[in-house]
Length: 111
Length: 118
Image (cartoon, rainbow over all chains, first blue to last red; front, top):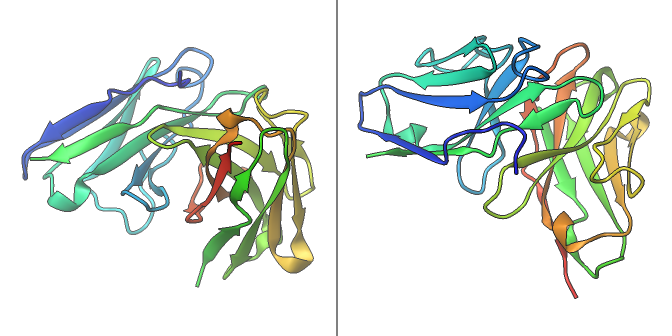
């Protein structure tokens, strides 16, 4: 069982918006603004999409945005495109004992 | 080109050992914290180990005492020595980069597959 809880799958049609949730605890997501999100296409390496809850690395589309409320972080993708179909993982800093914890991943299907 | 390339994966029997390598290029390797993250087939990502620029190391309980992370800055290389391997260690192992004083993985390799089976 993963430390952070994500829905197994979400779907949307091209042009629509979707949101993926990532629920942790007061020891990880709730305590630190250090949530990051990664996109992974089949057989490929993960790619950083969001860091520090809501910041976008250079080169990542502004269709991707992040937020956090309490122990739950969220990734929103607006204007869905076929190329967005992938697995998405959240990650949070969790303190000195086990510093990094990941979610189980969410498979995004673009209908 | 800025990249990380893993190698050393393969088939190993339970209780056996394996050493993974990660070759870095295109950036100042010695200035970054480096990590190993694994992914079992069809499963999520799991953080495995980290080494700081000063050589400080970190492990989760699931691998502590069995895995050892190390780095050789002169060779721009990261290593993971894995001992007492179990079936549950079967996964693709990725090396990943974290900038010092940052808390996200901004560069990943493509991974190397480790299969623990008799």
